[in-house]
Length: 183
Image (cartoon, one colour):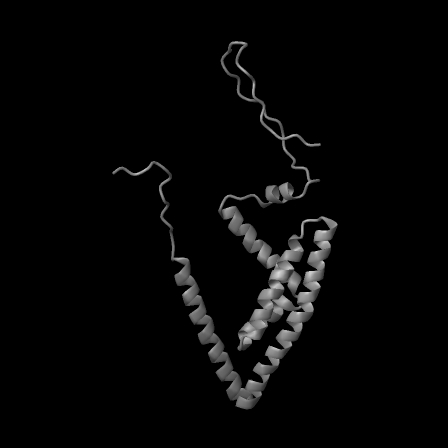
């Protein structure tokens, strides 16, 4: 039996993603417990429990309020026919921020507020865009071209380059032009 020809699987470099996620979850959990214990020692157990419960309720209220705003902005973007990149990012940040605020722990609450509050969300959006842009560039994607393809009225600047001269050919050889037509 012979193997079918095809692309050979590439070996992944670095740690497996599941191992990175497991270590990250363990580290965050240990850090959350340490901060809760320190807070309990500083202000008392009952105040710490009350603060954790209060942050859960604040997170639920803020999640509802900002979620409705993000949904309205997303709906308006779709109705107007524009690409809802910022609105989609805001909706994702509100979703993640709400989940983080509902989890017990002060570190997750700080991150949740950073993603959720209207005056810190633009900074979080820029950070997410920078991470996505860096990841896309590392994988060979050009986000400018992808954005231009998604917007019908965009123009991609470029230049015409003469092809290197070929040896003379017979007149029956067809000439093939490659490119896109802009209307």
